[in-house]
Length: 273
Image (cartoon, rainbow, N blue to C red; front, side):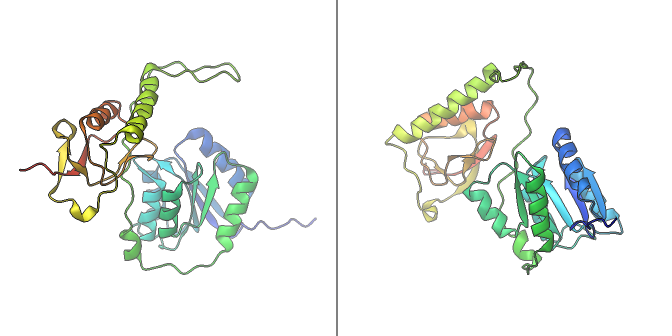
């Protein structure tokens, strides 16, 4: 009886997925494709060690976008920039992630991502994406080009909270008080941006002078953001060029206390020294 040869049978595949359940699911799907070699790593550090220490090279790396302490994009950039020994910078790379937003699509193109598997994953999505990526031929740019691509700063890992989640099927998720406050602050900040006539977004970056780093406690009305402020999912909260007022500063400080914003940000001061 003849058996059909899998498209993956000539390739060595590495999976990097920190979540145990997702790693188990993806491993089962990939192993069923019968690759020449398959290894599942639970962290980027473990993957980096496997890629640099082994004599044989992996042909494709499948990465979860959320891969603390950085992200799948940061590891993709490291590969493309030739930063991992014994690993060619043209190694095929696929990201596993919720649907990309516009900024993520731009980054993916800049780093020549080979494929994208949307969550929740299916057998068909993994198989089709992997097959297309492995068969595709492409000419990459010089590693220095990829090294210069600017990526969002990794979001600090939050401490685990003691909270009770609903366990019964089809029940609503029970929010902790901290989560409720986060949602309310986000809504409040968005309302401030929409309704406050004193906010002047998108100031010409050339007008921002004396760019320095300020702790949140030192922010003053009239300062201009020299860097985007993003939330825990990298969503844009305030854009570069926004002129701060007292209302926005208070909102930003509350977000920081809840670990939604970073502990400090850059601003170009319009206040005399």
